Every structure is written in C-alpha cells, then in structure tokens.
Length: 411
Image 1 (cartoon, rainbow, N blue to C red):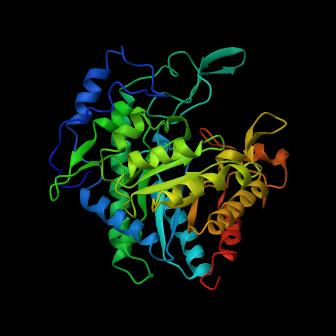
Image 2: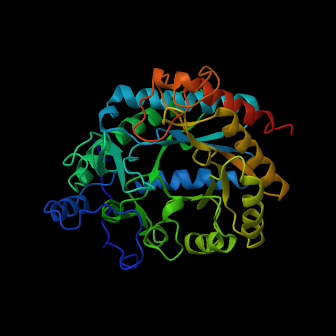
C-alpha cells in the first residue's frame, strides 16, 4: 500500500532532542515503545520525495500568482474511517468545495486534506470527567481510544504502528485518485492535489519517518506532504520547530491570538531562513473578536522581514464555544466573520490572502450552528466528532462562497 520504492533512509536528526517538547504522550516507560519506534524507523515512506517536491512547487506558485489553497478535513481522523469508501467521500468533498471556489474566483485551487495521518491532537486539559469519573483526555487514535475507561484512555505507543498502517491505506487511495483525475479533463492536474496533511505532534512518530530524497539527498518528512505545527507547540526553540526546520517539506504553523510578533518572526527564521516561496504557511486562528487587534502587527512584522509566507485563515479554532448543553460548537456567522476579516487585514498590509483551513465532515453532521442547523437545540441530532465540531458540506459551501465574493479575479 506504500510507494513501490522507498527513499534511502537517513539517520534520525538529533538537534530536536533535549529541546522543550510540549503535548507529548506519557508512554516513555511503556514496554511496547522500543519495538514501535524501531518498526517505524524501518518502515517504507508513506509519501514520496517527488510528491513533496510537486506540492512545494505548487505552493511556491501561490506567492507569485493568484492561485488559492484550500485545506480541509476532519478535526481528528478515525481508524474506523480509513476504508476506500471513506477516503473517496472525503476526496469528493475536497474537490467539490475547491471546484466551487475555482468557479467563483476564476483561480487555480491547490487542494490539501486533513487526512492520511491526522490521528493525534493536542489538548488544553490532561483529563476529562465522565459520569463523575476522571480519565485521561482523548488525544487521537494514535495515542489512546475515545472509549471511556482507565485502560482505553491509557497512552499506548503501539498505536503509532496502527496509525502508520491506517495512513498507508489513505495515502494509497489518495495517490490513485490523483493519478486518475490527473489523466482526465476536469481542469485540474496532479499538482493541484489533493495532498495529505496533519499536525506533526507526536515526535516519536514523526522523527522515525524522516527519509532522504534519492534525487537530491535532502531530508524530508515521509509521514505526510504538508505537516503543520500547532499553536501549543510552536515554541521557536522547541522540539517541533527544530525537527521540522530540518526537512524540506512545506510546513504550516498555527498562530493564535496571544502570539507575540517577535516570536512569530523567530518561527519564520527557524523554518524559512532562506526565504523560499512555498516553504512556509502561516495559519492565524484567532477568533472573530480578536483578529482585528492581534493579526495586523504579525503581518507587518513578517512582511517587513521579507518572508514570502502563504497566509491561510483557520476561522474555526478561535471561535469554539460551549452550548447550553455543554457541547462544543462553532457559530457559522463567527467563522465567516473571522475569515473575511483575515482576508481584509492581510490585503490591507500588501500581502496575499491565499485561502482557508477548515474542519469539515463528509456526513451531514450537526456540530456547528448556522445554515441548516438553525440553533443549538439541533446540535444533538447528528453530533459525531471525535474531538472538535466540524462544518457540514452545506455550511462549508456557504463559507467558501462568502470568501469567494471578495476574492474573484476582478477584485
């Protein structure tokens, strides 16, 4: 299920070791860890170096052309939804929304899925309460189970191998989809994707999947095409930034409302010291009521330093609230407001807003309020997310159409 040939493997880069490493699973003493990390270190690459080069070239075009980037998928992937039919549905969703964006703007759209490895999640709290019992928080299928219990919620490093195997199936299906679609006449090419992405969170997993490009000798992360660093792990001196500074993949970085412009610049210097187009994607996720104050100084600082970053809006994470029944939700009006405010701020500073990073479900879920989900009382109708609330296809279409109205080629 992996690529038929595997790039020459490189020694694991060591500079990240000893650096602060936030949000790591508590499994260092687990007896299954040594075998799991050895297995990963010898496993075939999940993505090829040639694929990474093609995506990076496509992203470099975003800084020189009017092309757009649309990145979307589940908040947390499930091991139980990696069969070909599940993957096909997700890819059709990505293409449908990207095609709508292309139709409305007249621009090429590079497509990236939150899939093929999005199995680990950072959490703001270590524990949760269920029925008066305190258990470890669910942190994604790579780390523990969503089922509530002292054993199921225990971090298990063997799950890294299961995550690899699930990712391999998804990557194979995505590769076949790109190949088939690239030979058609739909107006897209294999360079447009859909490509894979996930948060590069678990260092035991990511560090063991660094390989060498057989053509260039460069190190690349073979677990995904486009890894990103989260708001909670973007310490410029931390292990995550250090690890990804040593690979040639394009890299994303989430930026929250409390981010210091100088810290963001240090992240840019670490990840993109040569100021290369297509290398770095900055993804503000600030909240509709905070972005107006928080984002402008960051855009100015990065632009003044000459980093040709891709600016991508995540209007989801900063707008998460609790419903009256305690369910996490997001209001579509707040999500749209942040996305449009982001676009205006970036343009006001002479930069190019390049697209959206969204959490969207294939199924007709009722996890966010807006559109067909008229109020919070309707959230319980079909709320299935493993972690954070996702838009359904109708809500995502409304958001994409609102974004496109001010992003057409005639603007």
